[in-house]
Length: 177
Image (tube, rainbow, N blue to C red):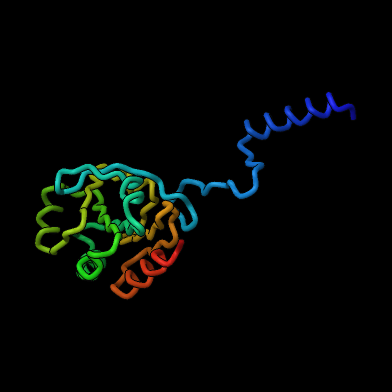
């Protein structure tokens, strides 16, 4: 093939690859955005019961590990695991770890009263519309996501968790480079 024709062929190939979204550079693949282990955590913004707005990507950027727990006040397994989250948060307050408790579709006033009585001092967010819960495909609560400092979901626990699991999962995230 003549050099000129080969050059045109290569340019056409690269343009088609770019349009198709094919990554041809080694080592530059990005994780797809999603809600499963290995995915880049889907970003969201929600208000907390403290009146502040929280954006997941900012929380991730400012912490070495982020735990996102979807729950509701009426859910017995959710209520049972909350003391473990409170204890974990208190014991690890000196570490750069964020816990976001995302309440699904309950009134902020009800959630605020419950969180205060349960001693939840970490950010408690309200997903009153259920949009974030739908994005994260929450079909069972509680569901907990463990996210590393790069924003990659490393583990998802559907159903209740406990202090030992929280400790083990977060320690594994903190060991990552």
